[in-house]
Image (cartoon, rainbow, N blue to C red; front, side, top):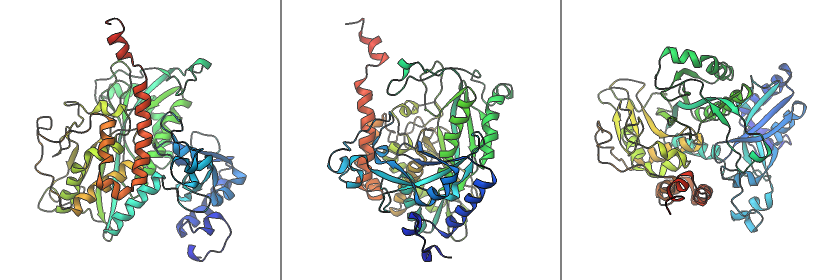
Length: 484
């Protein structure tokens, strides 16, 4: 029966929220819950920061909740990274000029049944990724998964699909002290004390990898069991630093995979006496910055051919314009590729990280590295500006928005910057505040995302900056306490 002809009374049916494929997947989930003898199912959604939040439902009620939603307070959408509510939710319109956001009312987590997993590390536990709706069936406009889906639709209307592969660095430590004393329950809580699993500076050496293998094997085994397209597990340059890479996926899949991967790694690590962090640059002796390099290309919707490839040139004309859009909009896009204060510590010259908006062929010092050659069907762009803490839906949406702007304006990226730290070019933002200023003034991103979302995102991130600026840092105390 077509989704359009269904006459059931569930919330999903009343508001026509699922496709036929999702209805079929939901029936498969019902069967899987019984077959695996699951006891609970986690219903999760990605918040504005790319952090999973949600509720755990007993298995006997999961089928009903999957079709009718789990309620959650709208204040979850008003929080910064300290989990503080930064909007006046008990005023008229809740600070959003929206009655739905007023007073801490409810929204609904509606499962996407195609995302179902059995969690290999949690006993008799299933997992579903959800989209979010108001009780009247309207989509919540601050849903970052929906924002990414909207940009995929724009791309689809132009005849293309988005393909992305993930290359994610992170740190994996032994948990020495989880800081669970009552006095450590500050807001945010005191970070745990950790110890290295392995010393660094021996990039890709087998001896160092073998030392860390017992720990990364815990992660690898469960990541594969989740069905994520893991391609490699690598030892990075810094102490206790790893990199996982994944095969390319199309559409929503790569962003969904990043959400599940990041959450899975942190949970598996903690259950095994470890601490995994996707923070860009931990404040630990000798720590190195971690990046998230996003490999991307466009596919023709009809033929699935890579439209970035060219027979007689490094890139097709369309790919050059898409690349030019990434360069032209880099400063505003940084608010999404690098959304934390800490991430801007990575933009340093001669550190295998970008510090300006440039591109080059197979050069790891630029912002966008072009990988491929004439006639290579795997030709693609690698954006090296991202941090692993980025919300994957906003990171990938920002690439589509910036790239399409270049295509629509027929921009040219200029010549390859083969000496990346000497080439004159617009610098990447030196701080989150600079990135937000660029986003605030970006006609491109305002047109694509709407003023309401851009202003919402800026307000939340500026709340983080205000808290940072109000705090007395170790640097200030060391610099001034004795001098003056």
